[in-house]
Length: 278
Image (cartoon, rainbow, N blue to C red; front, side, top):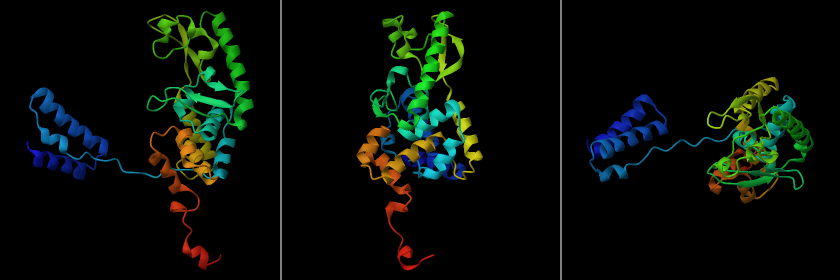
């Protein structure tokens, strides 16, 4: 099979089956593996093939009124998670994986550890959620004390810290801000632990809240993060600041939010608005 045949095969795969870009690239990787690892044939021209690119989609962002309606339709822990995703730009999994020591009520700061791209970053702790979150953390502290009294209270530690610090898994600072409601027993250590809250709890709650609020847009947990970025840009904040808060590696990723501002594409005013009045 030559370069022309491989290109024709990938093109036919894309056109006939209308598969995603990731599927096309997976087919190309399979061919590379076949020749290099199985047949042990080096085909340098395969490296020059153009890989399929994922289509660019504009993010869905809610208006401030829609965001207010969505949050008002939530209660309890899902409401706290929604306020953190919208108020601090956190991803859903970053919310669920928050440790007690990463929330600083004194400096109003949240530290995201080992986020997307294995990067740490800092963002704000919104005043709107601070008091409710503090009461929630106090309830979690009391629950943790009861767990310890019943020979539980352990939590999974990152980066093999459990071997270096055997008792750290019971320390208050390492506990999840949003722990699960049930225990599980770790097979290796025999410890009774709590995992963090599963993402599906928030996903289901946000979906139901969007329906209850009558929001027509395809609202999800990540939509709240999109809305956070969009509303900051609307308020005139520098795009580099928004980039740092979101944890984007490239500013071009953040730039996509300039296309969903409520002033239209690229914030251009339509000429019809100057000529006609309604």
